[in-house]
Amino acid sequence: MDYEKIFSDAIKAIRDEGRYRVFADITRHRGDFPRATRHDAGDNARSITVWCSNDYLGMGQHPKVLEAMHTALDETGAGAGGTRNIAGTNHYHVLLENELADLHGKEAALLFTSGYISNEATLSTVAKLLPGCVIFSDELNHASMIQGIRNSGAERHIFRHNDLDHLEELLMAADPLAPKLIAFESVYSMDGDIAPIEKICDLADKYGAMTYLDEVHAVGLYGPRGGGVSDRDGLADRLTIIEGTLGKAFGVMGGYIASSKMLVDVVRSYASGFIFTTALSPVLAAGAYASVKHLKGSSAEREKHQERAAQLKKRFKEANLPVMDSESHIVPVFIGDPVLCKEVSDILLNEFGIYVQPINYPTVPKGTERLRFTPGPLHDDNVMDDLVRSLCDIWERLNLVRKAA
Ligand SMILES: *Cc1c(COP(=O)(O)O)cnc(C)c1O
Image (tube, rainbow, N blue to C red; front, side, top):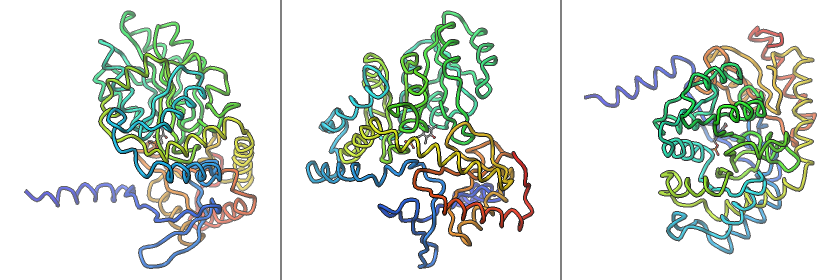
């Protein structure tokens, strides 16, 4: 059996579709975000501007976060030293969980090593514990939620994206006595649209369903304390489980859920992805704790973030670039072809020192390939001018469509 050949054919299939992933090798510089150094295949290094980071607010270089991490490192050492159950629970984990529970107005919170794991572990565990559970899942849910739902083995129904009528139709058709769970996101990070959270909660009440909300692209960014869209809209208490990450706007690493004491206890006690893995480094927990605390008390970063996103959308529109409708801070520009999408991204990086990763299938549906810009408080007018000029140049050169998407 020629194993290597089978693998190389699999890679070739991806290459042929123009969606072979190439990582940009970059070094970020503390204090200089969004500037970074790119290392190419040779020995060359070049200064670039990063336009696709999920460190939305630059908290990854915030002095309070770095100080907390330095202190924790010197105080406790590098790693947690064990699973949460076996010697790995550090006081920083406990502080952070209390802070996160408070952020979402919930009784308790539970840390995981990533947002991916928190979705996978929680959804699979909760649905498995409810015999006959039926899950209703938005069609654009993140891969980690889909994986968790699959692993639960529960019956699942996919509703059309943010489509309340379709969701209700599916809820109505299900066994009225079956336990139910509706899984969705607040900010969908590829289109930048926002779910009708309140109306979904109304449907959940009407049909006796639990709700699971992924606020990964909203925590730190929305709401008076950075608790996400559910915080902004005063809806946190209507959601059964809120899930978030510490790796995006909070700038560090890790994931969590916030919910009732009982639900957190059951996930803590049953979820394989929580139990059988080394706890988050206390250094990361300390950094995340400082970040969450800071953004709870400061809205300046959030306001500037929204202002910068609005400014970039405006500039793209004025330049007749096909910026897609987005209700949030995400600024997608439509290309609609994987090969072109990669080509535009390559030219931007190689010729203009602008880094924006092409977004192709399976991250987005085929035919909707795009560039996805994530402007933040540290993207000033100068880098925006430079970006718009460069895009216009490429749009001319490749004869791309110049209308609103
Ligand atoms: C990034 C992402 C996750 C995973 O979070 P990580 O902390 O990066 O593992 C989960 N859900 C959504 C919607 C995401 O975009």
